[in-house]
Amino acid sequence: MIISHSRNFVFVHIQKTAGTSITRYLDQYLNYQDLVLGCTKFGEQVQPSYRKKFNLHKHSCAKDIKELTGDNTWDNYFTFSIVRNPWDRVVSLYNWCRKGQFSFPICQEAIKASSFSQFIRSECFKSELSQIKYITDETGKVIVDFVIRQESIQEDFDYVCQKLQVQPTNMGKLKHNARKREFNSYRDYYKSEDDIKIVTEQFSEDIKLFDYRF
Image (tube, rainbow, N blue to C red):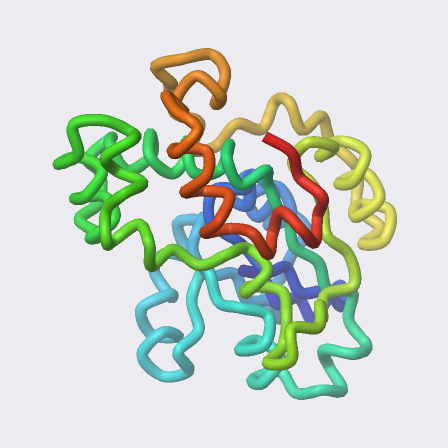
């Protein structure tokens, strides 16, 4: 998550959507007026304090950030986020969790599961939020100005860089948090129609809003 007063923008970071790559790239253009939570060494150091005092963290939702910044700042800054095909995103989450680097309940569930199919049937997985929850208000209205799609990340991030007046970059070279997969395609992780259906139903709002297909 970034709140930049020097460049007048807010970045809402949804998990497993290349948000770390974006944050680390933009960090070089920020200064002392700006807040980064997570992703960078300094961002990780200050995150506990902001979480404790303001309930603000790396993956804060847009409505929570807006509540803290106020309507005037939010409405006058360029606000953006990034989303990803839900079926692909869940596979990314699964592989990231299984690296065993974190003790979050969802990570422990992934390590304990005998397969991807078992993982998506766990009670812990069912608590995972839709991406739309991160970028909408209480009425379900999208409140960010622009949504990058990971599937068109180069074109979309070029537009963001233009808006922020920063130098664009080759997004293919920014691979923070990349994780090795058992299969080349996310589709290969889904062993049955039921597997596909579980993710389809859980993230139906994302699929409908962004018109994603398996």
